[in-house]
Image: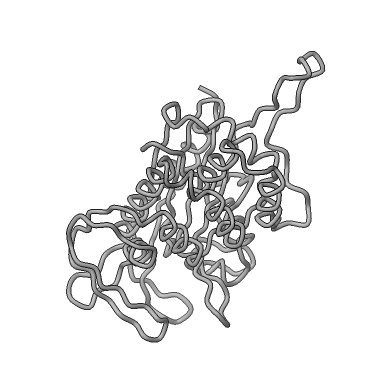
Length: 318
């Protein structure tokens, strides 16, 4: 993988724009549009200030921190639903990024709502409830969050000219009630924005075996890698201004302008970056919940402990 994907390609594109001479005013406008804190309290600082002994030209440095990435499905007249959730550990000291994908049907305690599927947290309490639920589940602190909606994802892929993916099998599914129409043929091909989103979201089938959440997460990670590769291309440089305009309207985060700038300076060279993906392990099982027997993704205490210890380890400077 050539590019850090912690900001869902947004960081890559913004970095490109900054280095080819777009005005600071345009960059500032985009980061202001992005900035949406989810707590009345100001976010804790995740960068180290200059020491009194440091020379004036010395730069501030980011400390290792956690970032929650959420891909949301927001439709007219409906509350946003979280379709993709990734707990990310960003460690600038090691130039590493660890991405833990969380299956959307994961059964855990949602503070104030009891036990339920994690993807319901977005509808109940927005990104804030998703964040606090994962903090409680893994016994960790999540420092920052970022959301990107599906419309923004589609527009970015189309603006970049699509992404090349080897579709492993025929994928066909339709549901007029939520305007879902997926129809993909197998083989190596360039997917447009809608097709790439369909490929990443596909789970139910009209013509064969339905896929698990794990299968879907593998495809999501595949799409992210393909997008990251596109972010390194000259095409993304030439289209940086348009991409910044799209992302400014479809990304929300509580990363500050200064923190984004520090990330760009740290991760600008893809050859030095190390990225690792992981998935929360569990089993799909039918259980009774609120009088209904449905499918949930159940996680053991041992897996909770593994995730907690792994995130702690990734936050450490090596």
